[in-house]
Amino acid sequence: MLMIKTITVWLGILVGLMIGVTSPALPQAGNAAEGKKIFSAKCATCHGPDGSGNTSVGKSLKAADLRSADVQKKTDADFYTQVDKGKGKMPPFGRVLNKTQIDDVVAYVREIGKAGKKP
Image (cartoon, rainbow, N blue to C red; front, side):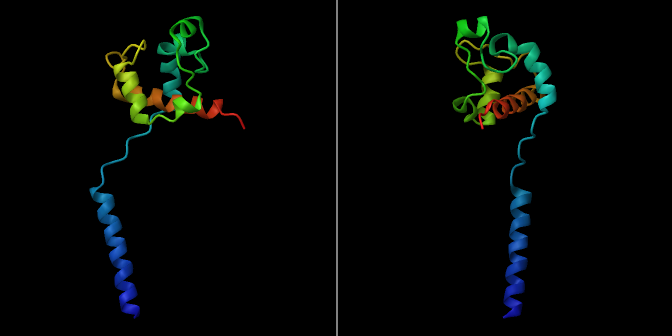
């Protein structure tokens, strides 16, 4: 009986290792501190420094409040694509920002969402 349990444990470990080796790598999380710098330079004109969209340009374009639960429900991939390709009145930034920079902006938008939550 002890041998069966030992074999079962080892099989579990081997399967876990195999899954870890064959699974695609998880996306690298961006650097929110770097994302804040980029956001300030490229996004704050419309979305505001706090992400609220409460700027004259943001109001005229009906920019999303990045702190809202609806916006924060989006996946990182959705955010990435929207920054990269643009959407609606939002222009694409994929030609001026590289992948790492977009990942950084996405990380910062997540931080904005955490900061904007009400207790």
